[in-house]
Image (cartoon, rainbow, N blue to C red; front, side, top):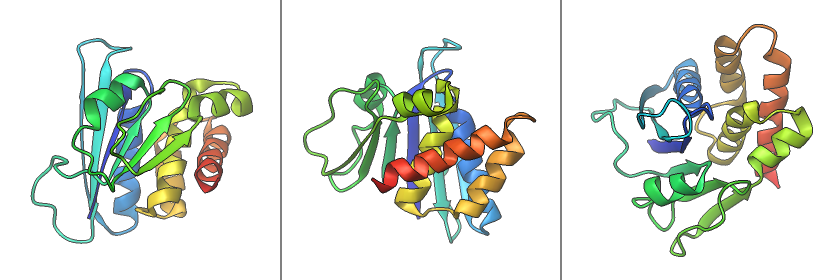
Length: 175
């Protein structure tokens, strides 16, 4: 079982990213639960999407022992990584995150928003880049399933740029 928390601010597409990740797990024949919460602000407030993926039945729908926390903002690190164990994975967007808890051993410093803006022209696709990095790092779902799930959820006409964003995230995590 893998428990993941995708966190940042409203408008970064992390709720959608969680839904896509859970759908990819189902396409791989696994069990998945996705939940979400966000502040009262439509954009800019703290938000998180939690995803649990397992080969066996999942008996509780909330992340209680995260294996991975994605933090796209400093507020997200401060608010949502407190229960990440020292050996868990903290994946941060260095565009917005400048400090991380010292006790964590596995911190992936990825310039997600900076890189996607430079390569694809818009920060809008940062959530898909993050998904690529998560899949490359955890192998929680297959690249084929995450690609299919992305293509099911993105607006028509954006399929190619979303595929490029996914590939960019996979390449970022490989470095």
